[in-house]
Length: 461
Image 1 (cartoon, rainbow, N blue to C red):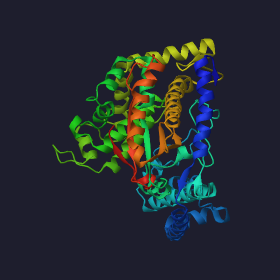
Image 2: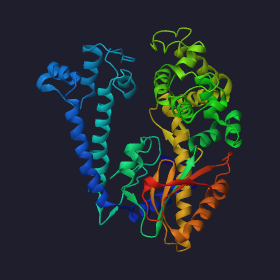
Image 3: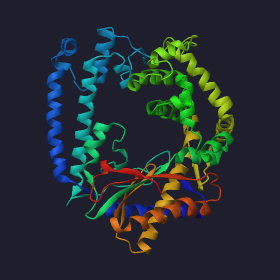
Image 4: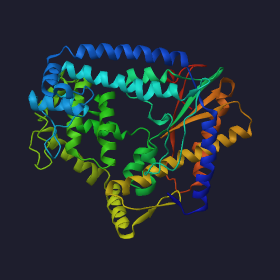
């Protein structure tokens, strides 16, 4: 990353100072809980391991590989399930090897697979998170690093431990790990989440009128609208799971360069998780799609065109509409930006940096959006921290995640802190960068006094 303006250089300089202060502040750890969680998780892992070895699948696995059996190898498991036991395989690599991602494994419907995936999750939770956090804790506090120069996409990063990679989407693992992070005495953890930062920042680049309309009109919901199209329901029938599927299973994947074939596999398999009936017909989602003319997933073969009556064909049509009707200006911007990069060998970000080097199409069109979105957060963190120090507040910023700032806020300063946040995010940053053409939005999560990070609840400011 090369700053080419004084503002960009100052952002990096001040950012290094601000994040060093965040590192010094540290976040409080409940070490008693952490040690207990490590022990109890170990017992669960042992129980699952013993149980899994009683299944017929494991016995075939052991017979096939003998002393080379590696219980931690998904590749071996995939070989057993899809090549030896001949379970239907949804996707394979170009060399014919079965994909061993969670979607493909769970498509077998086997209880062994469910327990194996939970076994894997708990092992990772104990080794990568719980033990790592305890190892990096000194005198009840953990001090993660937040370097600015390591990520190629020009976002922030974290290590020792990686504070930006603490699980949140899996409720069981999130509860297990996030309970270890607690507020100081008479303090509350307050997380400021920049809602849709990359979408908003992207709009400042491509200026797609439909995207800007979605951002500015709070009555509109892009994720709900696309989910309704995917699952062929009315907007008011879109559930939480459907909306999440539209958001993370299609929209963001498409923005970052994925395509309809892989999206079809993922979205089709998410239906099991939804487990809901369509109110108007009483049908489950699979049956509902059949009633709408979608009878099966489809081959999803990269070398073949999809067939009518398949979910794959349905997703192809939605993708075409998504890029050629709904967001056609954004689509054209991506083409123009890529062509300009190929011609010049570099591009400039709105925040004053130049990015050059050997980039593919996805990188060239995603990096300016991802990098500048992080620069928004970094500028706000610097400004908020300066104001907190100016007013001699007891409250501290203790962490930074990709799109959020985590503060350890004294209970008597909560209102003052939130007023500073509002001023910086809703007013100050748009004066600093006048090219920001859409309003920024944040969500605020607050824990009880002295509570754990897992206990945070959303409030409005």
